[in-house]
Length: 223
Length: 394
Image (cartoon, rainbow over all chains, first blue to last red; front, side, top):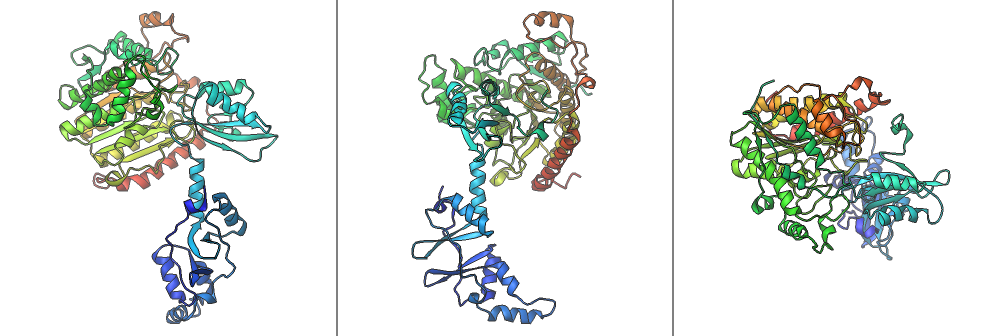
């Protein structure tokens, strides 16, 4: 899944010489938080509604009319961030997620090799993609399976569920780093009756949680 | 308890809806339930007629299923048919295998629920119970979760077509009623209300509070997902308010009720922990609402229920007694126990109602009850203001 599949290509932008009043109006009208700043087609900076509000004089000390005049009289390039963290069309969504987390920011302008603005990808776009990846992929039962962190173990579990029992695995998530040498894996199995799968996995030495492996959730219910 | 003339839709031929001997959706449970109802003398009288189902017509099936799907099911019905494309239609799986005659058998189940609706809407009876019905996972263009065609949707569509009535569908099977919800997702004249174990772990993985319908039908799909290990206490308490409040606002002309009994403690496919009290109380609540708002009209079906010997016969006997306004004595007749005990792999209970006093307490009961209450409040906040009658009747 690539940035180009998840970004918005149709985005609002401002120019360096536009007023803060204009920029603020755009963020409110279109319910957006970030505006890329574009000069001659190229990305020159980014300005957020927060940047604008932080630049504004306090309403406690300055009259409304003067605050409005400040917004009209101040240029976007006076408050914008010039060092913009960007993504490319062919970056993966997980790359974008990493950048958003590492820099604690809310969106990435998407640019081509020449710095031309192609779109924006926001934390909401990334979160939506991740929620989809975690989803069940169709009518299914959700099993949590502890898989030893050794080559062949995941294949063995899948061989039981998908091979021996011929059940459709509609979605699969494998935790990258396990604890105690085991990884929690979430199988969505396309059946209303996962009992046979659970028994077969347990017989083969896997620990299975249904409804969950979480001890707090199952407390006292294992009898 | 007010008695209403109530029909039991039954004929032994419906046990032909049969996938394979070791399949959990075992028609034996129907035979057991009906024989228990009969052993208690609760059916077959002038006010409790037993009526045979009829075959649903193609036109009746095509109101709720795509032509491509019905054609495919017919094709797979022939012994030795090529089933290489069955998976595309949700069939040929371990859950919903193909079997010879599957079209005819499922059409008979659908016809049973339509027959129940005909009797109720025609005024011949006030309520009817198609015990073999309740196939709530069947979708417009594919089967799923033991369900080939949707008898429920076919009956609701028949009611809409023949009478133009407003239908409230209530489903308290432990699994989300995703098929019926999907088929009427954009229809404001059919309100679907499903109460089930959360799809967070359980099949089919849907049925969350924010699934509210679409387009004109936005606000007319309601879902209350319960926590795993929920018990009678929080479940019945929610039914008492939820069903009455939604019905007051929606003002149905008839209620269609799916009585899956797989939320019982002993059911092997779910994590809910209801007792037989749930079935008795829910039917009482629904019938009271129906008496008050829609002339008592209830079209009821069976549904899930995989504790074939120990739960299903008792649960559905209580459902039938409640619908028909009869008192069911607690003692299970000796001749019924003797007739079936030899075949049963488990010791058959001797009482119709569970003695919950002996059941182990759920350690997280308070937390589970509180979470269910919060889910209910969240549903009230999100869904009620969208109902057109909300605020008028209160």
